[in-house]
Image (cartoon, rainbow, N blue to C red; front, top):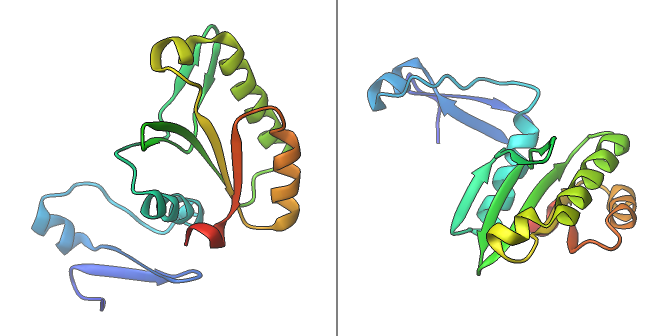
Length: 153
């Protein structure tokens, strides 16, 4: 793919393409996409989507119970199994701990299970073995997987 008046790009770890103004106009899109600090995070999430090819995919869909809310990077369904996806690129472990506590709270509430059946697998995709090991320890007792990004590329 080459840049043109319809397509623009920039390079991070790989070349990222997006619609230029003329390309958006051609297809009738008003959504402007540009380079932001979140692009690597979004690309990791996209890698997971392409790897799993789920039947349902909801990016950043809030789940609320009692006075709490959690927003997974994605909620998806594959082979009748539900997943909460967390992309861990450079998030602080304190924030990861807080999010995992919220998942425990949601599970303990029983509300998800009441509405959808079994509680989802919590899927973390991360970039280092050290982070993978730490996340596995934090997720102990929950139905969870912690994969390296290379495993889903």
